[in-house]
Amino acid sequence: MTDRTNTSLKPIFQRLYSGERLSQEESHQLFSAIARGEVSEALLGAALISMKLRGETPAEVAGAASAFLSEAKYFDTPDYPFADIVGTGGDGLNTVNISTASALVGASCGAIVAKHGNRSVSSLTGSSDLLQALGVDLYKSPEEARTALDQARITFLFAPHYHGGFKYAAKTR
Image 1 (cartoon, one colour):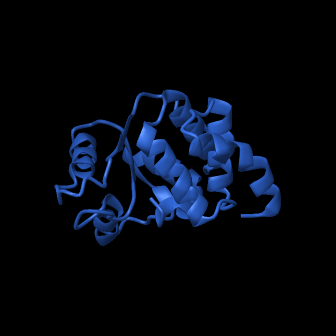
Image 2 (tube, rainbow, N blue to C red):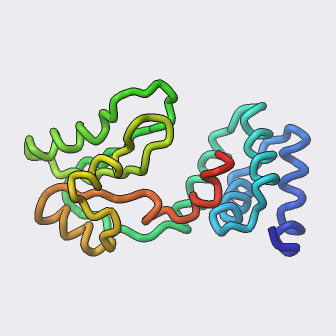
C-alpha cells in the first residue's frame, strides 16, 4: 500500500477497527483502493474481518459494488430483454455447477443469456473451467462478447477479464 493511500484510508481503517459502520462513500473509497491493488493483504484481511464480525451493512455492500463496477471493463448492455446468470460459487459443498447448466438450457430454449463466471474456487469445476473445456474463448473482447450475445443468443463473460480488481482480493478472500 502506498503512503498516500495509507494516509487517506487511515480514518476508514480506524472506524472499522472500532466496530463502526462505514458510509456508502467511505466503503466506495476503501474498495476502490482495493480494486486498484493499493491495499496490502494484511490490511485487506483486517478490514474484511472487521466488517464480517459485526456484519456488513447495505451501505457498505453498495459502496463496494459501486467501487468494483467503476473499475470494471465496460460491456455494452443490450436494449432487448435477456437473462444475466451468475452462480454464487464458494459454497464449500462440492455442489453441481447449476448456473452454467441453467444458462445452456435457457439459451437452448430460446432465451438470450449472458453468463458470468470464473474458475473453480470450492468445487471441482467453475463455469469457465467447463466452458473452456468445451472450446469457449474466455478472453473475448467486450465487443466480441456482445456480438455473440446478439447473434448466438448466448455469451460468456469471464469474471477476471471484466473485473480485474478482484485479483487483488482473491487470495485474502
